[in-house]
Length: 236
Image (cartoon, rainbow, N blue to C red; front, side, top):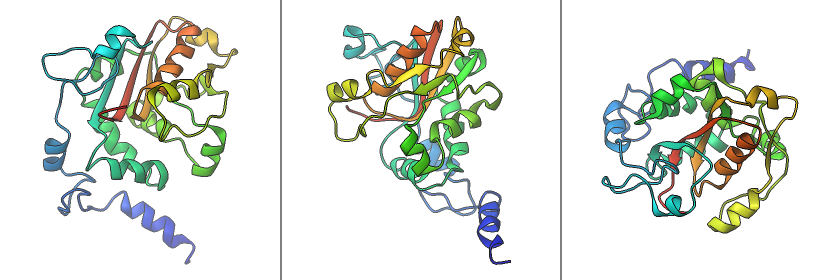
């Protein structure tokens, strides 16, 4: 009997009204409508790396000088308060139910819906094997399944090289760190050729990991590649 209590608590937590994680309003969604409107407003972002920009600018200077290997990038929110704490709880704390809330905000981001409706596949960024075993789940895969479960292709992209964590590294160091870390399974490469792909991840900082994954998909023949993340940092 006692063994069933944790499972029952988890079941109830996904069904009973909850307090808003930001303002504490109850009953509410994990983040109430008022807080979502206030802390997740639509804002101008670089069309290729999703970095926050001034409203009159379409693309950042870095992307103009060094175009990334993606057709577009989208982010739902800035990686800042109040979103940074739920992201950490989702990513490291086992609170996987956040995937639904994050996916709703990702889906509502300006410009995202045509990609979600038009792509052939959603491809989550794969985790290193050691991190997957430690965490027990891939947060990017959970987001992809919450967005469009029937079009998720989690086996297309593989993590083929273990790398140190990206935290604390400069932009250049991040790029070198993930170089050659991803590849398309050769047996599945024919399925990638000519396809339109939306890469999914939780947070983008410099874009090094997402862009390296995009290069692997391009090398396998993907016709179009875009990236969709929940949160984007303001600087890298």
